[in-house]
Image (cartoon, rainbow, N blue to C red; front, side, top):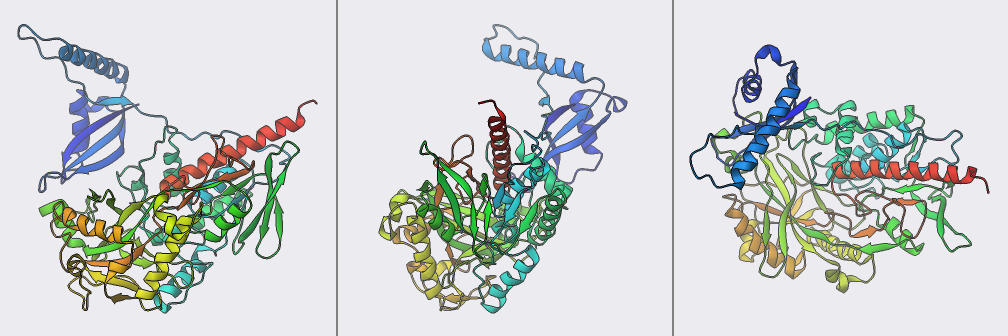
Length: 571
């Protein structure tokens, strides 16, 4: 089997056109095509009104060896024609046809649990990282114990709606904490720019499809799932883990890690203490705690686990009519069923040295309340699979570095202090009942408070309070966003429209710190502790967090096997 790439077809091509294009490209007859499957489908919308679909397909044919040989010869001839200057007209060499061997994306387990198993590994957190760490450990026979401070996903959903509809926050069960993690209440994006030479991302996608995700996520270029579908998928994955001998305990907040120091001065994790006073023994603990577990970060810092501050971003959510974005991106073909709701990705480098960019863009979605601490307001974006809400939204954020944290504190927790300061400020500006401060873009750019809404109605619940966002973020961030919005308007006409709406504040773009680890996955100064995922500073988004969970599960498995081997070795 080989992969044929860069097959371009019109947006409304007939179903038979793809097979015909494969036959034409390969120069074979229909009876010589055993079959093909779509490996990837994307679109090129650079020419509005003439959008094309771009396919990569995996092809089976008895003439594979001949075609691969012909392609290799064409590539050699093409290289020669470029390297020498022809002195007289020559026959044009055969052009390469853009094919390659189909990559082997089969996932292979690195180990299987020993019998007997010395101690069951513990995974803290049931976000994408924790779920995939737990799932892969269970598939390898390690019967992990998975702990989450929050509730099971359906109970958690009720608590989350309690904030959105009744302004009642449960600090242990909300958008940030509980089964599925923060990604459950998001757009459910499943693409990433991480390097993935071992194709762990395919394992993530395959497990999601098994759990009930649409099969198209395996081949569309920017797959997404949406919140409601994620709920059922998370439950299915939990059932799989439990069927394999794993155990998941909700409402089980970890308040301490048990650490011993051996005679050589090396620190080793020996288990965890829970909020209810119980303890669990373990020599391998995965920290998949998410980017908002601030009390856990503080506990780890107090216990001497190595942490370091890292850059992240802060900003505001912006809302536009989704129809405006669709028209700007797709022109007359806006609304086509294969295109869906249009998205965007924007970047602007400011005169003050800051970079402003769009983050977590949610086509046809809503802005949601994402606070996890009382007396603070945080925004995030969410979409359903259909992406059919009236507004598009995205965070417009400014990159900040640990040097910016100095006015708020020092050490690895200073970024958290910055977040808390501006989230508390947003709570005050919103009136003190979890409503969010908001402002029309036209007023924001002119430096005047908003007193009434325009054509863009806010989707944020519990609601917004209009005013002046100039005091909702540091001055350098406001200055940078004011410069960036007109620049973005030159890329998407109408982006800086007067009636577009800004809502604040967006502070949880990524973890404000990193729990440092070595190449073997262990904490740099505490053996047996495995920092992982977004909260530890090693992922950003559902797919990359799932991938890091798989890597971490493998590191735990290899460590357990090595420990058993060392223990059984003759003295």
